[in-house]
Structures are given as structure tokens and as C-alpha cells.
Amino acid sequence: MLAPLENRSLIEREPAGAERVVQLEAENLALKQALRQARQRQKRSTTLHARKLGEQRSEIARLETLCRQYRNRIDELESGQAIVELGQQLMTLKHANEQLLAAAQRVWYLDKTICAAHRECERLARERDTLARRLCDDASALHN
Image 1 (cartoon, rainbow, N blue to C red):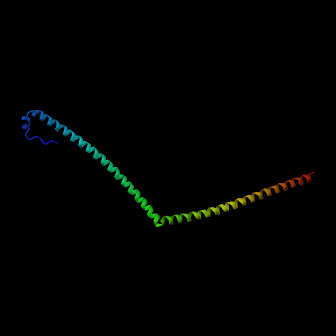
Image 2 (image 1 turned 180 degrees about the horizontal axis):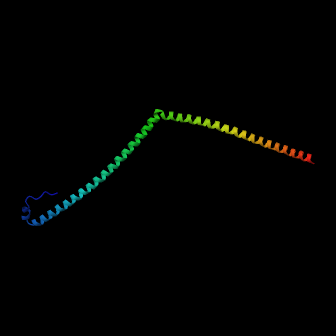
Image 3 (image 1 turned 120 degrees about the vertical axis):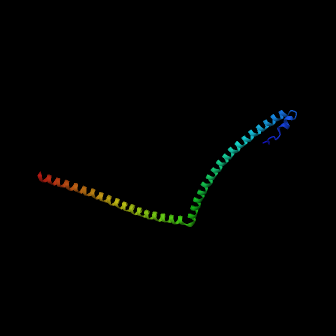
């Protein structure tokens, strides 16, 4: 920006001084407008940079949280606690599996027992029917 003229009359006394004053005022106005535009661009740029900075800070915070979670998981794995927990789960599942195998064996045995009982019921029913027929035949023979 141009410094204000201390003695405007000196320029005005020169030949073509009035034109020079108009020219200087026009340059001054153009510089003021350029300065205003530069300040607006800088303000927009600063706002944009501030927004980007905020986004980057949020991303850094998210990544730091994720890093802490991973570090805790690594520490847990390195401590052997995860192996101990897996061993406990394995033992629990092994016990449950043994119980299921025992139950399956009982079911198989009960199924075989039921099949044998069913066959025995069929045999007894046939024997009953045979005896009933004999009785009917003997009763018919006595009445004839």
C-alpha cells in the first residue's frame, strides 16, 4: 500500500500533475482491492487448513485408540493369558464332548433295548394270537 502523500500540492504543480494524482489514486484503489482479495483468500485458506487440521487430529486420535487396543491385545497374547483361557475352554469343551458321547452311547443302548422289547412284544402278540386261535378251534370242536 502506498504511503499517503504529505504534500499533494507538489505533485499538482508539476506539469500533468492532476493526471498523476488520478493515476496514483487509481493505483492506490487497485492495491486496496488486491489487499482485500488477498486477505479473503488467506482467510479461506486458513479456514480450510484449520478444517483439515481438525480432521487430521481426529484421525490421529482414532489411530492412537486403535494402536492402544492392538497393544493391549499383543500384551495379553504375550502374557500367555490367552493360551490359559483357550486351555480352559478346551477342557470345558472336552468335558462337554465326553458327556455327549456318553449320552449318545446311552441313546444307542436304549434304542437297542426298545427294538428288542418291540420284537419281544411282536413275538408275544403272535403267541397270543396263536393261543387264541387254538382256543377258538378247541371251543368250536367241543360245540360240534
